[in-house]
Image (tube, rainbow, N blue to C red; front, side):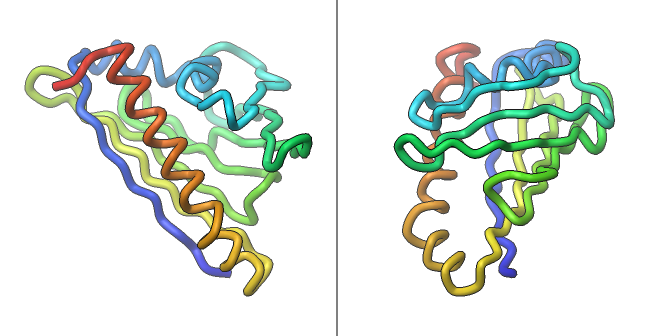
Amino acid sequence: MTLHTLAQEQRLPISLDAAWEFFSSPRNLDEITPDALGFKIVSLPGEKMYEGQIITYKVKILPGVWVPWVTEIKAVDEGKSFVDEQRFGPYKFWHHRHSFEEIPGGVLMRDLVHYGLGCGPFGAITHALFVRAKLKMIFEFRKQTLVQRFGTL
């Protein structure tokens, strides 16, 4: 299986506490996910994330085709970072580290995602034709939504 990496960073003119308050609530994932993804939270045990938390979603991978996506919050370093990993869903492997660092005038937010599709050559073709572009679109949407919500540095 080939592992792919998506890395993104964004500077926001908010305090580290405000950034943590927003991003540590799994419910806010709805706001920063494009409607076209058909993303729905199915099960959310608690409004604030904690290590070991299991969150169940549904995502639309094709028109009319929904798949479950179950993630676990694997690590939380309060106010600094957290990691979510897929337990089952559309990827064979998904590891997403969110980190936050105080900088002059705001906070630097980083996303580092390692993911793999599996399925040999079919997975490679699917990644090249659809998945890479879709993930870039999702993270670009997040970036723009966060600028609208918090502004920019």
